[in-house]
Length: 253
Ligand SMILES: [Zn+2]
Ligand SMILES: [Zn+2]
Ligand SMILES: [Zn+2]
Image (cartoon, rainbow, N blue to C red; front, side):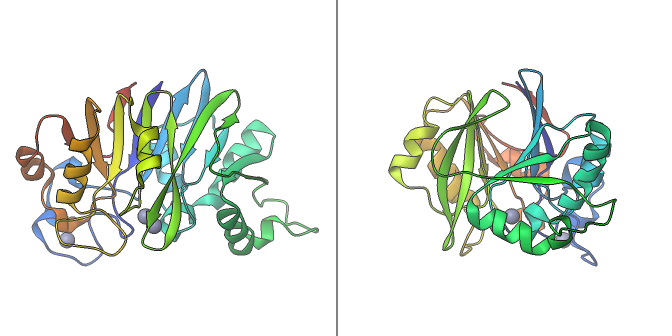
């Protein structure tokens, strides 16, 4: 399986509009972070997790030619706002785009993109197929996804394990039974927003502590704020089995 990080930034992205901090002014390409998403290429199939506001740019930048389905972690805007642009794949592939998510996520998609679900639809709108999931493993085009239910403040969010790869964004609490599902992964991606405490995201020290309790060979932090610091400086502080993800990073898992 190949994993490509399409975006690794928090909801505002990095740089932040009108911010003059050192991170937002950095010329290091790793300090330029679109909103979080990953592209999974597995068994000849192509999936993305989430379609944030940068979805179109991410599809162009990574040269994604085919998309078989979208799997959603949760309904926050930075994870769904770019959904309209899946219509490029509707036209190209001549089929509806399957969208997998918790019922609450699909309900919100139906509200926000109401024009895609009207009876008398404008011809150019996206064609979407809503497929509810619960906290049980499910198959997408023959590929098994195992949800990991985590808490993001008061909101339940799904992380996903696919084979030896586990992707968990937007969380500040994972219960012990759900953590069990992560064990044995070869690669873990985990939310780490910033250094200071936050009501719905892990901080850098919290993420490091949790990772150190799990026996995973390598972990990557994502959903990073400009307040985390410069990519190079933060990575220099971390043990070698914990890295910061960056946009464009690809992994063979
Ligand atoms: Zn988010
Ligand atoms: Zn900044
Ligand atoms: Zn969120």
